[in-house]
Image (tube, rainbow, N blue to C red; front, side, top):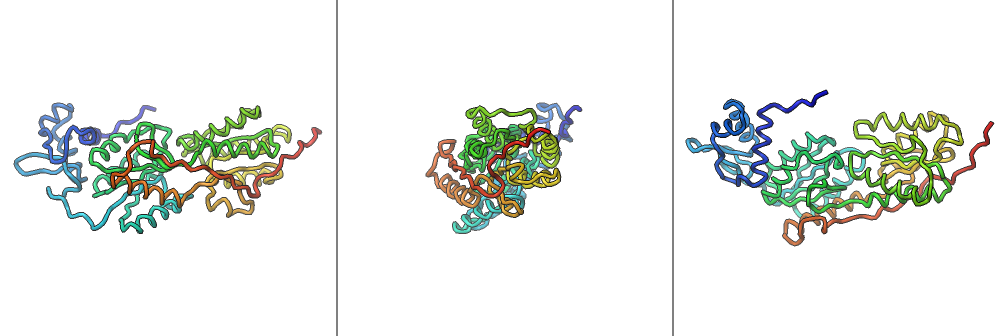
Length: 377
């Protein structure tokens, strides 16, 4: 099915924003007239008028009667910049706010900002690129001192690159959580996910498992790197990877594809099915526990399972998960400290300022030594 293009007025809006983001027009510069933009874009005057009207309402532009349309400085209202709230305002954009490990990260950010007397603005992208664009647009209309951003589906590219340029053009420092887009030069706080994937597989191999499966969500770089570490461990130990034992899935497939794949693997005979599995995260691992139960098998006697992130879910089930640690609260606090250094001009931009956390393996009840295969009947 052919991808449907956005309406023309929205295409033009994004084009004008890209002009501003790239520094083609600075704050208070006059834009070309409606007639000139219409001629340049090949769009009607009505489309141009609608685009300019939306951008004015959203705070990108302001009009001066009899003079034209100008680039706004920050959140203009009737051509005037409103008073900023007292203290520093910092934005936090994550893929989720109230799910999984994210409330703990948010609490870490919030407590660190409160200690600094700063105000927090929260936004969630729901792991959707369009919502990330909307969140960036909304944040750019605020009088921000800085921004903490978790990228949305980082392994699938950055269609919102112009908005990151806009942050730089406006002098708004930002840091990234968990991963960064490959085309963005900003400091990042992240777990060494490849090492985590390696350690998960290594733990199972040392328990004697030879048929180890891996299920990884690969629309973000965290999953790509966890899978890479998993594969590296298996190659180094010369452990075979059976057909169907490496599953890659997307966010949209997470509720169906892993469950279906595990059901198919568990339906194999005792000498063929995997005896252990490394999961992208604890959320998936807990979901797969139910599949194992429904198959009439048990964890860890029939199948050992390793999760990732040490979420509250990891100890909320009757079988406590072996998992890799994620420094949730600390990451939030460290992100604020890093951002404050950027705001104070005490830290250069770029990857040299990265903070990479070493994931600790936490061994609980979901992994055990591999048992001998049942004899064939």
